[in-house]
Image (cartoon, rainbow, N blue to C red; front, top):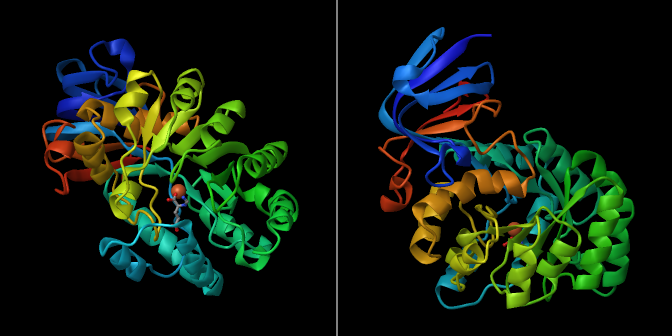
Length: 389
Ligand code: NIG
Ligand code: FE
């Protein structure tokens, strides 16, 4: 296997806290040595060991590839009209999900896969090297299973979200839909997924239904994660902690008890500012979570309804400007935080043994991602030790 050194890096984010300074483990005037698909060495440029190949970063910054731990990319159709209506003053409700369910059911496998591939490529160009994605726009046994099959062909991080909303076919009998989601649908979906998720919210699934769905998923070998406390206060966050879910996602409406529960758990709070941006909703209080000691991840929630952005840099800029995260915290949350939300230690950091997944920025430091919002600063993306964008 051939080795490569990327040298002349003005500022390298390793996310190795043992290097001192901030959690980012920054090294100035740095180099990274890659062997095959892994990082084998990081340090000062002048001390880099000899390698087969040499790449000059030209005094730019290098960061770990983004870990986008929350998206919904197997869908068809478009909700421009709904967005337009919101921007003219209408509120967001989960009801719009039905529009995408109808379009997704009507689409062919080829159309769904082409959409997923397009959004994955879009995300990769913006520095995302790991992306989780979910079902949830099929809501029949066949449509949920095919969404997961299509997703699993493109990413290891696949989530069964048959419990996105109660299927319109079961509007009069939600209990029968929960029985389907925990029974026949789960059996068909579990082989294609790693995670089970539920939208725990008024108008979707209540705490008892969510517990039943997540426990059934866990019994089939899927690990829980939850859409929790997005549109209103509710039991989702406490349930996430009770079930040792990897992540409670959204976390916009939190009581002090919710914050305490997260702070004393392994459950990551995944914040999705693209959703608040696109629904003109109030921002989650990242500062309150961080000050309480909660581990925070930052992801896109890319979906055609509430957050149609695949751009982690955009979410970083929002988190810094509007959620009072520092640029260092936001970068950590979008890389190491995302990895923790997926319970992964092989990504989200540039330390010996980790996958060589990284982005070279057209900037001297990662701070520019928030300082220069909207500017396409990701100039090269490497995944598994190879340049891919
Ligand atoms: O995470 N909250 C539920 N699901 C998505 C929205 C999906 C949609 O509106 O299509 C979310 O925001
Ligand atoms: Fe979501």
